[in-house]
Amino acid sequence: MSKIIKIGTRDSELALWQATTVQEKLETLGYDTTLVPIKSTGDEVLDKPLYELGITGIFTKTLDIALLKGQIDIAVHSMKDVPTQLPKGIVQVAVLERAISHDILVHKGAGFLESNSPATIATGSLRRKAQWLHKYPSHKVVDLRGNVNTRLIKLIENDWQGAIFAQAGLERIKLLPKDAVVLDWMVPAPAQGAMVVVAQKDDAFSIKALQKLNDPNSELGTSIEREFLRTLEGGCTAPIGALAQFEDQTVHFEGVLFSLDGKQRLAIQKSVPQKEAKGLGEKCAKEILSKGGDKLMQEIRNENSALH
Ligand SMILES: NCc1[nH]cc(CCC(=O)O)c1CC(=O)O
Image (cartoon, rainbow, N blue to C red; front, side, top):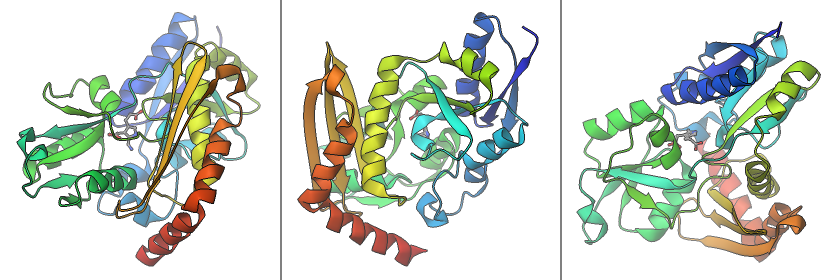
């Protein structure tokens, strides 16, 4: 095929792995491609917690701009890093078959989980922090930023008992320690473990190529989770988890909203036939909002803006 599809990606090891996976799939289909690694603001600013930067989409913004300028034809993202509202002119084309969505604890000995001794856990995620403190109120949670590799090194260098990662990310770059503890009680980020490919809305050639990479179940599950997030958050970052899982023709959905300190927890669980799944995320979010989520989101907005 005549056109070469320029695949934009962040330049972390994980992002490059993900982009290469998309590249291989496109090449197998007979398309010519080239990788264009781009440094993103999210990777450069390492000294501030993400939520303090006050913008969503910090990891995706640089690639969005390159896409809109035509420097790249498509962009590959970890779907959980993509804001629920895509920029004008950019469309989601393919959600690849999703990997495991759980979070995982990397540690230096997991005995502290059973004992009552004090412990310090590192994570930059409000969602992980709130859920950890909810379960282990006597622990301390410290901020940890940077790409997966940087975070692993910081864990080794610091006097922390453990740090929390997405299992999928560590597996992809083959850095998952054998003794890591799967946190199956922690509700993952909406779309965690999923890769999404976006293109310009008028680029029929790239869109046609990418459509063949889409996995319908992964697309449906992540869309329910992101709809839950979109309905709750209204543009602010909050400790929100969501997971849609498929069993036969049924979708099991679980969504949670925590206070920043992890003390308050609002949760919802619903199972519906897959063909009735449309609107499930929004419906569950609205139930959370009416059960006190409205007030909790307002408190989170106030606390977040006090930090800026
Ligand atoms: N926020 C960074 C990020 N974005 C996607 C992944 C992992 C892969 C995935 O969830 O798809 C990670 C690392 C992590 O959370 O440990």
